[in-house]
Length: 439
Ligand code: PMP
Image (tube, rainbow, N blue to C red; front, side, top):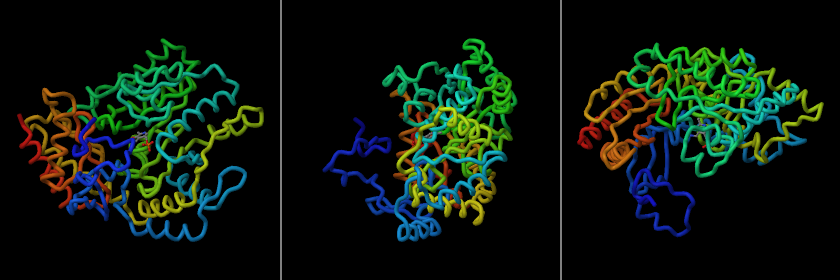
């Protein structure tokens, strides 16, 4: 097992009485862009918690809304009875979502959003009398959470092999990492659209009339920050349309302003049938996810329930009042306080500074879309991820900057409130860490 002192330590399952105080890595407080560590240091949180605290930690608006909610209504079910906040929040989300996506299914996490979206996609086809469509297509190197649906469509071999066999009839598109390298952030790679045509190849293999849905992260996050080639998502949309297949965007990371627009769908100009969200929805203050869907998808499965095809899905905490209160205040911060606009405004400077790291010894690639970035490093001979872990460790120890290593890539997704001086601190700390870990 990994040493608890390592930044990469995986603490779960938690063991009581572990001598956790020995680790300086424990976070005991937070404020704005910063975390307070157990050893008294304050570090700049350049990953926004776990890609979720987009508005900064303990945002006053969000904290106040949660405190106020607790004194009024603690819990109400979303089955047979309900409460107003969930409807108001659904309305707010529909207003933010691409046109025509006016229905919302509340969950408690990204994993639940993914499994919910996959189930909605299957229910949609069955409600339309198209029971032959059961296949789901994901993509290699995709992360869609840890539910059985999510690991089935996800592209992480380790997750699939440990728990398989998983969902029946799942297949995966090739990833686009080779094309993403050295290309996107100075203009989307013009080449690479043929990677989307791999979908046609898969469909030829499987018979398109058996395929229910295709799910992709518009920009893959946890597997190394992989922007799509230019036209890739649009091409997927066209192919799905041609064959009556639903397209799902997993926007658990890219949603709510991370790329400078409400959703990645807006940035890339492609509207999927379903969007999965979580993380930034409540700014990390309390667990919540949501699946947004097009009217037609919703109407079909609602109609289906009349004919006995029921979605029969939902969680005890779907639309929890406290989460709704947090989410509404978070959306206020994004829209009324202009944080999404701020994300877009800071992105060019962030990009410019990050790209000064390109070409340093050991740096394979620098990629970003908006305030989502990855610096891919040459792995050490010791194994995959070792160099990136050392750089991350260095950044927090020497530079006071918390970053995340995902495989061989250093991931950055800072809160939208960061200023130029914070960008400078992040990049300076990375530059020093890269220099000191060079071999
Ligand atoms: N989908 C994507 C794209 C994600 O990045 C994540 C989390 N990193 C998930 C799903 C799963 O979310 P959660 O951990 O909230 O279940």
